[in-house]
Image 1 (cartoon, rainbow, N blue to C red):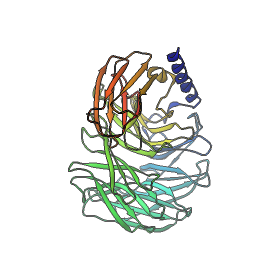
Image 2 (image 1 turned 180 degrees about the horizontal axis):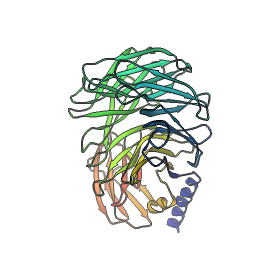
Image 3 (image 1 turned 30 degrees about the vertical axis):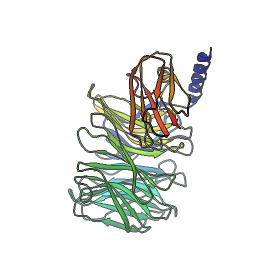
Image 4 (image 1 turned 90 degrees about the vertical axis):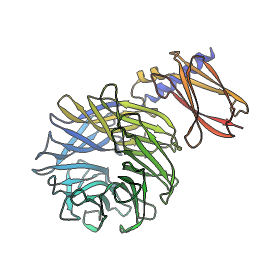
Length: 467
């Protein structure tokens, strides 16, 4: 009777979660369309930005799609000339319109481009900026506290590109710009304004660090002058793709190892860029980390791509971790032969949107996935993972007992981590519904456990306290 009651509570909670609107949607036409940036808008819908070869004036144009809360398209706009334009970053602005960032005008002779629109996507102004006589590409834009905009990207001819910053007023007029030159290649992927009105930039460098390419963090003052720089990585190649300013005024940095068998690479730092901890996520294939955000529970949501070595496909990938980097859940959302997330955001209902593109049959389309707070998409997912875990006693001195109640009666495994995210105990192929965990050599303190099965890498997490 008690078991039925517990399962009823869990099932009811699952039903309540599904008061949320969850969906998978694609957008585009008969040619290739790619999604790079997505945000929830103030009306509860979403703004999606990228590039299209299906619509517009030239070979490829910037592509902006506005949806309602259910992901249904309300309108779309293209921006560009007769050549190639790349839409990479977009945000809703304080006036309800949008600021768009990318590259305009060609492939080898682009300008960094900013376009300001009204709430319906109609162009208000369109400005182009150049740091050198060579190519200029905008990677990210943010509205600043003075109502203007800060954009970052790179400038110069390959293989010696340099970080390029542009600060504008609210009308797109340039106030200042900086080209941070180096002896090698340095790219910027994202920028955020910091509490001192300066800026923090993430990217990559091959001119500093441990060798090869390294994740690169740059702190500047409010006029773009460098205050300090940090690199993170190994003698192999690491790329920085996304950053977020954390609630403790530090930074969380996401990227990946740039190799055929590379994993997602995550680094947590303090406010001066000093590494506090780092971790890798993925498997034996090539997995990419593209976007990160701190979540309301002080953890983090990561998004990117995961290679499936069995099927040969690459799948849109999301991972939820706690504040020390321990996985709470991980999910893939396959679509076609290839799918990837380039943007992730927690939504107002506590769920998440994942946005990128999917390659299906002969073309690619923008791909938007809305999931709930547990990473689930449908009520069928809840039924597959319905489980309850109990621990008693907790805290414990000599031993504790972990009980697992799972309606599918699967065999399970328990992994125990210390506060640094290191595995200290692994118990596989557990057939009993209860397992006794002896203290043995465990020091006093807090530990985290994960329960998994062969068909579900992560079912449940929790804490153990050793007295």
